[in-house]
Length: 354
Ligand code: NAD
Ligand code: DAU
Image (cartoon, rainbow, N blue to C red; front, top):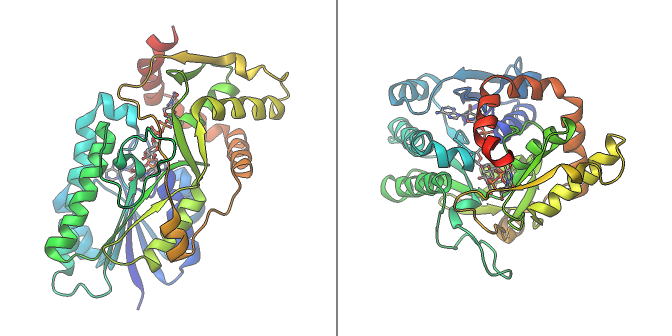
């Protein structure tokens, strides 16, 4: 029998890589991609698989419970891989309620609909919730890493909303025996990432000779993973993860923001034929993000040992692929950075950069 799988948020950055991997690798699955096509969702991200026979796109809002219930009835989903979310920390600081609606209420709606459909027989069903390492808060001791057992300590409206959704997923497992699995991943980078996030924003600004806004002193640390490796990990957790368990996913690849920006500047000097040091001249230290988490670092030992996953790409190779993709896809970036995004960018950075 074919498996009917709902993937939410499949027109976004990570979701597009997950949908592509599943559609190409599993011709026997029926894959429905549900996405509301917010500013961050873009069908161009998955244009290459739009006509695949095992793939259907549905535009819709996870906040609309009646619609979600009818979608589950119609497609008789066996499993859910839930990625749809508001995902940008800076936006969560200015528009927190949108994060509560999509990330918390939207997730609970999916749990309710899954239980409605599965309550007679939970055998072979799975609700997979894709989450973030930001739920664990901020690390201050350089020796520490986030483990699956690290207590939750979310600091931003975004991470609080993701932490809340994680708790609801576990509550549905504990209370209603819904078969769930969760993963919490570190910072992703790669093709299709919306240029509000650090790396694509810097790449785009370097190309356009615009200032590179580094928050605070650039001392904050993030752990970077190539997005295709996250999609591979999601495949492994979906197929081999134990029901009720959580898996941390990360690259053991920590960088201070200023160091990664320097690396980008220098690599792009060479790629764009600019004098060495030119792009570093664009760096501008600006007012810090409110409540800026100092350091994230994932200990990914559990998924490596238990599921045999490991990152496939060296960081340098991943960065080269990423920069080359953005340089070769100027049209993609120009389309999504016109209009609405321009207003956001000017509102967000006007005071900081003047
Ligand atoms: P993204 O912002 O690029 O994409 C989110 C997608 O969700 C978009 O296509 C958007 O249209 C869709 N969406 C938003 N609200 C919706 C709604 N109400 N109904 C239906 N669809 C809606 O996000 P991303 O960076 O790809 O992140 C995907 C998931 O992975 C999120 O749950 C995020 O918390 C998690 N995550 C992201 C990272 C990262 O580094 N980007 C790391 C770890 C975990
Ligand atoms: O850790 C996983 C999380 O990583 C995901 O859950 C989030 O969805 C994703 O957005 C990301 O959150 P961050 O806040 O870490 O990512 P962002 O790209 O916004 O910022 C990375 C670092 O760079 C952070 O320390 C803030 C800094 N920064 C960011 C921007 C946009 C700057 O210095 N300047 C900038 O203009």
